[in-house]
Image (tube, rainbow, N blue to C red; front, side, top):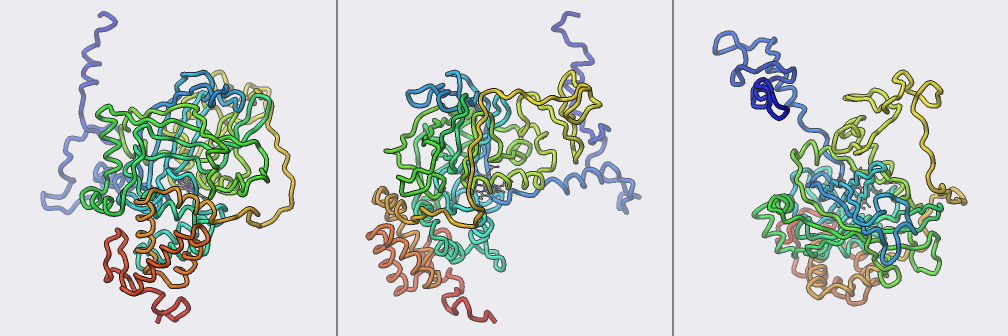
Length: 532
Ligand code: HEM
């Protein structure tokens, strides 16, 4: 038999479509359980039925606590080897960015944030933009959003923020009063509210939106010198956002439109591409700026800190199975490689604990052995056990009896430090304080003034719609923030709310004006009133 000819036996195995149990037993009857007579009762020794149904009972894992609804795709990142006009090695030694033209496989998951799996993809919400780079030095995750800033600047506030944005714990209905109650009393959110209530809060789909790391990171070069960086993805397909009316029309037809758009584009070979840019700042406090470079509610002005291209990403393969790849994917801000580092950004540090913590609960302790999360390089650890561990992280030639370090008996050994170690000096009192440069409205005003007229109109109308059903004290706080940001912004919001008050109109969550939709509000009875 020549090398290329397959034995009959092998061909039979390849063509064998026989249904089996998980134990490999052929299933001869997949239609009927075993019963005493054809009318039952059933018997407890129905092993194959009990196995089938009990596996089905466990098909779902907990959905992500945020960003539950998502879509994913595979592709690659290609580095330019430069950052703007300079060699990238001047700023970072991360291998993923060196050697012009080098490609690194990636897996990307896009998502909405607040609502559960299968919620509509037309919601007004940030969109997640998480990228896993399978680099030669192990995995790097860049866990970002479509917008470049965030609602809060301290991780302590994240659970409260998400509770306020989620449906009411009693009615299970999303309630804009709870959203604005939190935001009006967390004025640092005002810049993000300005984006979210504009058309930028409803990207047309996942292909036509930007991405951003949002938090400030560091790049470290071969000499152990660091700079502060922000990452941004720019879609080559262009950017497209929706008005409330357009979103409502799409939602009436298809509440999976963004997942479908991404899947269909890749299936027809129309591969979406993004260019990766960084903004760079020297690694210090920058007292000359009127914002703190570690404050994630602020944009770094492009005229002072230009966007410098470093590479591009192409998505060219759909997942083979949604659950195994998209649902079990686990991204985290702690997943960095040599040459990339954290900044002191408090949000980033809080996030970094949260991701792997939730993934141990959501996917399981051995979530890093799931193929989508595994590094595409040799992994060698002394970790042992845990549920569903199905292989050992051992190096070839390692003494398998030695699962500890240090040892002279052939166990794993520490890697050599390449490049000078980066050892920032940290000094200060332990405090619980906000950063001191905390102007909450200046950049919101700048953003408002940069919007086109139709974007301003949408912003004002959307805010009036959702704020008009809120407690007057919340409205007043939001108007005061808008006035502080920009005279016209504040005036239009005030006038619009006064008019809505006279007309008694309010909006339902999709934006159709409908006074009857307004639930009974605390504004009627006052927050302190006894609900009974
Ligand atoms: C202190 C603030 C934050 C905390 C505690 C936090 C926590 C979490 C948690 C627990 C998850 C679920 C992860 C999983 O189940 O795998 C998640 C997902 C996610 N977060 Fe955050 N987050 C924070 C802020 C942010 C910010 C500022 C961004 C944007 C830069 C962001 C982007 C994402 C994305 C894109 C996902 C979905 C990742 C995926 O597709 O699997 N988060 N976050």
